[in-house]
Length: 203
Image 1: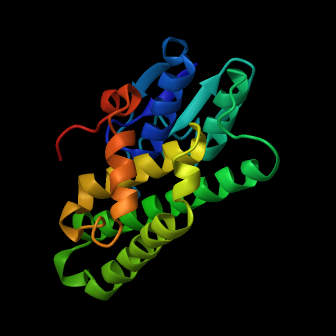
Image 2: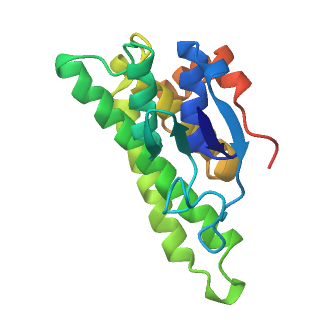
Image 3: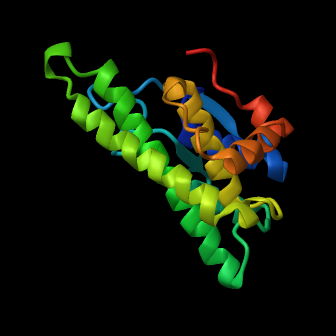
């Protein structure tokens, strides 16, 4: 299999952590792609017409894209248990969606400052996106700690990758303030070999 890859993409990182945790790392070749909303990598478009990483090329069917689709596929391929069953399955999916919502907002914040001309930047837009991140972190801290402390699953991986990206791009915003339980959980989870091996390069 071939994975369209960027070392700084938190969506790619979710997949890389899963590959480490399920023993599939050697089954996937990484193909680095440099793509932005303004300049998509032309080599990526045949795999993902949206021009985004990650995208996974496989022999048995068309390329898969969107990190949640790829993670579910790879978990199934490994006969893994990262998505649980019964009521826990839906909790895991909700956690993963919450984590991806954090990523979506954090990425929009980064794009606002990195890609938009200075005279067109909108502080209120950035603050609005940060509000989503802050509310999600507060919800994780108050509602989801018992789940996060449980057996490894995709919700945990997604949340850890999301918090890692917030640290990577928006560390000065201080998501840990008022979220002591979540911060303590993340410090422990981030020490896993799979997380250490997939840390993005310095910004």
